[in-house]
Amino acid sequence: DIILTAMQQHPGSTEVQRLGCGALGNVAARNDANKRTIAEKGGIEAVFHAMTQHSHHEQVQRLGCWVMYIMVDLESARPAIRKGKAVMDAARNNFPNNGDIEKYLKDVYASICTFSYEDLKNALPPGVSPSAKEDSLSAAEFETVFSMTKDEFKALPNWKQQAQKKKVGLF
Image (cartoon, rainbow, N blue to C red):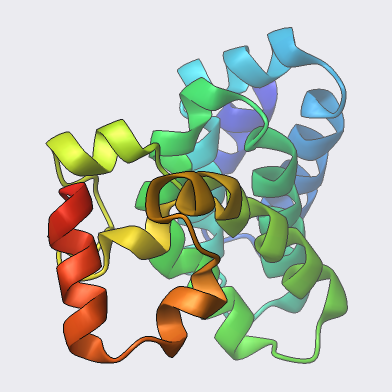
């Protein structure tokens, strides 16, 4: 509560936001109960707000992405993290040479951008393109559903890809 209160009371202070993101990451690291508390009390949104307000401060961006890297292991936090994808994309674009941001977001995106076949077949999850639902399957589930790898699928002519998607109900 103290960390989030400080971040909320001093939104314009880059230093408070940087330290707040770092503190949240440290509190969440390897502690699922703390991750749940942070998510329930709006910590994910607070970090995204800090990243938005201080988009050109590399350390705020790096620490914000680090918090998401830690929090993404908590399944219940993933919808809130998905909502901040544009903020994370901006961090990646603003600091393309920051290897930490790249590493953190690679893992975050692998977790938030995949959905089960059943979820994709029955609905359109947020952030998923209706014409490219297959891209949101994990590699293993893709092979199970399509009986080929993603690379083999992408090598097919468009009309064959469309036919395969219709066959499995992802069109």
